Length: 125
Length: 366
Image (tube, chains in turn orange, green):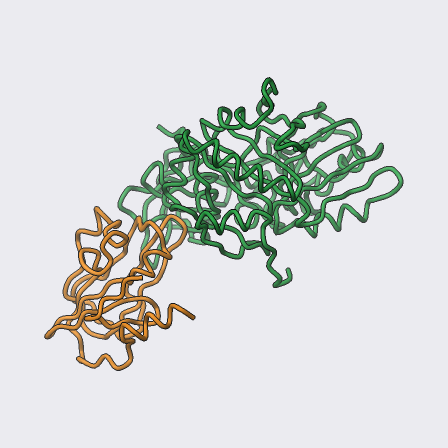
């Protein structure tokens, strides 16, 4: 399972890329494999404020709708518009073009999240 | 239900084929192999092979078998000729569905019932209480293999496995056949809306038949399919799932399946007078079919349904249709229900999404 080294991970299978004043969020390779073909996404609108751990989006396969939790808190700045017409990007390219939304984080702290090694280890259990 | 999970007799085949296993109705079963949508499309365009070993296979035998079944089942078993099968219900005193099943008549004193996994034990225990010198019931969970070969190429693939010259059964008929050297039952039935067969075999021969069918079907585009595709295929065909579209609290007439309830026959069955009244005067609730729009969130089980601003019922089954590209659903709503073509809403995550009342065979909607 692919777990890029420059990302932080939530136990609920989201990843976050922390940059200056910007956090990009998506779901992991493991999550997209478990969900199978994504056919619909519900993404938050820019301006919405969210706390870490809150449900902020929904990703749906034929089988089920799955909640997506915000790995860090902040204000939504952008949702990935490409997913509306091509939700399969999440399956094909989960860590790049399949990102879900961006937010301006309230804090740069990511201590509550898992390192790539910790996340990989959590999948072995 | 106990927490114990049984392995399908075909589990070693599924592990070899990379099936992702999940617990379902007390069984560990493959939810998907190559991918739900791919499996769904293979079944619509070529063929799919499904493990249905979890479904209960019950045999009712003896001179009193027919009379016993007549007193229990909503569709009249005496209408069946040898080798014929039909869809039927075990009902409770309120007309609700204890189980939906397929009943086959193998001979005048020999009947075969295929029941849901989740109800198998309850149904068999209930039948055993009616046992006597005139009728006996056999078929405990885990005692046989079942598989469904479905799709436009199913007949061609099965013909390769049958001894040369063996005729294929016609729609809704069942016959004995020699498969991999042993006697098996082959019925031309299924749960996908496609032509296809259900094959019932013993524990030893079943895995051989499964492996051989996959091998013979490969050049035709046959794929092993999981529970995921089974559910999306059955809903596109407008077929009900017990526990969602049918239950102890929902009658066959409310589920829109009154056609399979035969009320005008001499021998009563549980809930007959209630079902007779519902068929004559119309039930207080009725099942309608809904189609969503492309780009809108799909309907799901349990979502509330609104018509002209008022809640009228709930979605019983719903998902995004792989064939149609929009949501499809069955909903149980108050009667009189909105008519074909009228717009309703269903509520998804706090907002209302439009859907149109359509025909239940979703693929036949123009």
